[in-house]
Amino acid sequence: MRSKIELYGKTLDCFRANLHMHSPTSDGQLALRESCRIYMAEGYDILAVTDHHAANRVSDVGTGGLLLLSGMEVHPKGPRGITLHLVALNVPEDFPDPSALPYQEAIEAVRAAGGECILAHPYWSGLNAVDIMAMQNLMGIEVYNTSARYIGKAYNMQVWDDLLALGYVLPAVAVDDMHRLRDLFRGWTMICAEARTPAAIMAALKSGSCYATQGPEFHRLAFANRRFSVQCSPCTEIMIMGNNCFGKCGVVPGFDPASPAQAKHPDLEERTFFEADIPEAVGLTYIRCQIVDRNGRMAWSAPIRV
Image 1 (tube, rainbow, N blue to C red):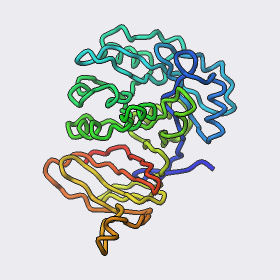
Image 2: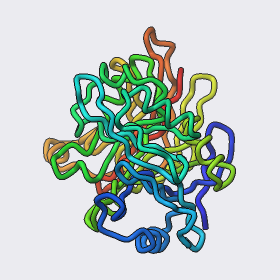
Image 3: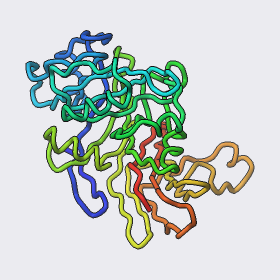
């Protein structure tokens, strides 16, 4: 049965999506039909096919119910001459590669064609917040990218928080960036939408009606009268985070040890609920929730403005 979420007062279906993967059209190992079969068997609802420099005729692929989004990974030169990796979603199947254009023109070409761009693996690419602030009209950022783990740069939380603190509010996605079997199923995005159609899915992503995860699930997120609450699958860490030094801790291993031995080897207490009052602190402009399960797998809510 498809999971649901109560997201700030609205009950929505959660669709499991991989928004970044490759086929033999560029440098992927698996034929597209085989990838569709594997992702469907794992319980995915949506797959974006994002080969380097080329879109695919996804309308010709029989998926048995998996929603395929036409996409492309484009590579214009960015700030400081860094080659960008922009995941263009919902572009036409005959969309011409805009990688030769200046980066902002490439982003606008994607948008003019009906698509949107997500910034892929900024840590892997060597981008900082100043670089990213120069790019306008991005739809989101990858907070986790599996294929970047092989050089120790899979996570992008700090640059994401830097952007949020500077006022560039982007939802985050997690992806497996599948090229080989070793990349499968280590990060995905739960899209909270009213329907599983390209229009509804893109609208949900643009509005931040989604969360990124490696496994943990959010069941309820609420914020009213400056009180934030979260219900989730069992987790050993639940934190509400914001800019500057703001944060609220629901649970972390060893939070209140009774002895030095317990501090050294803390119990893994699991919780599924946390709520906290959000102060009217000067400079606090956003909050987000980050959770971790007993296996160290993480999930990240989309940020909300305070």
